[in-house]
Length: 93
Image 1: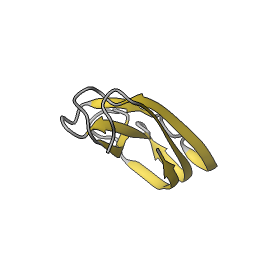
Image 2 (image 1 turned 120 degrees about the vertical axis):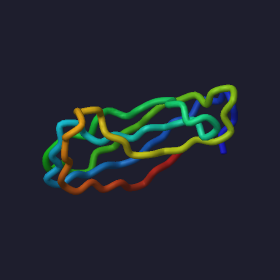
Image 3 (image 1 turned 90 degrees about the horizontal axis):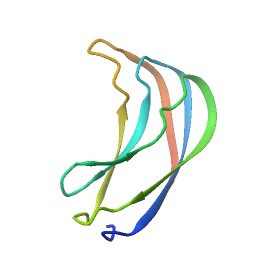
């Protein structure tokens, strides 16, 4: 649950192994009431990478009392496979 108009910070850690994709994965925060995008993280680096911390600052919109945090991919066309492994840890709001 979030309060409309209030500022928040999402923090989480990401690790990748042999990640390959034309459109890399990223975290997206959306309004739980209307599914509109609030913000996106940077695209996670391809290849094999040790744990890296990401933070996202966002403000809950006026019509928002909850958010969805999801993994999406940056657009890379219709035929764009993704391979590798992605780990998340320690999400905090």
